[in-house]
Structure formats: structure tokens, C-alpha cells
Amino acid sequence: MGECPMWEEETRQLVYVDINARTVCRWNPTLWVECGLRDPGGCVALCREGIYVVASGTCLGLLDWETEQVEWAAWLDHDKPHNRFNDGKVDPTGRFEAGTIPEASAPGVWEPGQGSLYTLYADRSVIRQLDQLGIPMGWTGPWTTALSTTWTAWSTLCEPMTTTCRQEAWQTHGWCAS
Image 1: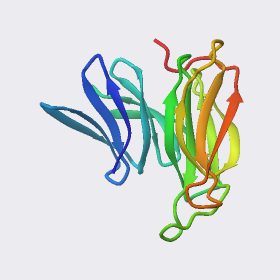
Image 2 (image 1 turned 30 degrees about the vertical axis):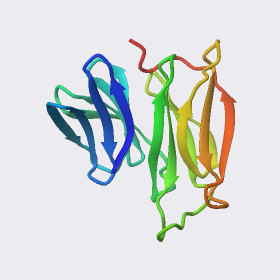
Image 3 (image 1 turned 180 degrees about the vertical axis):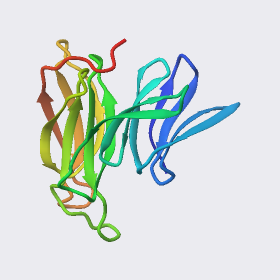
Image 4 (image 1 turned 45 degrees about the horizontal axis):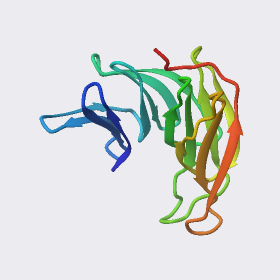
């Protein structure tokens, strides 16, 4: 199940996670490579050439494509064993922001308010920015001129297909800036 696709212009490859196969994949018309993860994949983002920040299960780490190894930086949501990362992005300042979700307890049934929004910083510290969320589903611009505002959307899980958008401002230092 492909998720969080990202086009890497420099290598002309599509990079994405396969949640159920627990892999990060790179694809172009002549090449397909995958790197295994220990837990279901959540998201992947380009950090710098050949290095990606990846979320798997409730862990954040750096994937080096040359060695196909992940150096884990943080393990989060210790108190929520049924959570996993769902989506995330690196913003223009280099900070990596990603959100966790609860796994379904039955088809179409989730415990509401279990998700959180995290920011990973250059010193590998992680701060929980928001909690008691539903399912984080995306990050997007417009980034503010000061690069301190991020837009994200998540399902509230209160009604089918209900979406809440929220604007939050954080003063941060870049993680993945070259």
C-alpha cells in the first residue's frame, strides 16, 4: 500500500513507503529498489542527497540508501501501543513534522483523539506540538514568509470524512537543511 509519494528531481525517482510491506521504495522506469523497515511505514521525506527521514511504527529515523540502514532517532507514543506514524513532511527550514494515528480496532473503527503531531529537530530532539488528534492526513503550504507557520489537516474521526484544518506557528531550527 503505497503512501507519502515524493518525487526526487535530482535522481528522477519516485520515493514512497509501502505501509503493509514495511518498506521504503524508490522507483523509476528502469529501477525499483526497496529498503525494509521494522514496523509499518508511515512516511518518508528527503533530508539531503541519499539520506531520508523516515517514520516507521512510532519511531523516527534517518535512512541511508547507500547502506540501506536506518539510524533511529526517537521512539514516541510509548503510552499508545496501537499507534503508528501516518504522514509527515520536511518544511523549507528543514524541520520534519509528522503525525501519529491509532490503528483500527475493527474495520472502520478507531479510538478518537489518540493522534499527535511531532517535530523532529536538528539535534534529534522531538517535541509533541499537538495531541488528542484523529488522523493526520497532510502538510501543505503556503508556508509563511517567516517560515514559522505550517498547515496540516486531520480527520476528527467524529463523523465519516470530517476534516479539520488547523494553523499552528512554531519557532524551530531546521533538521534536514543541507
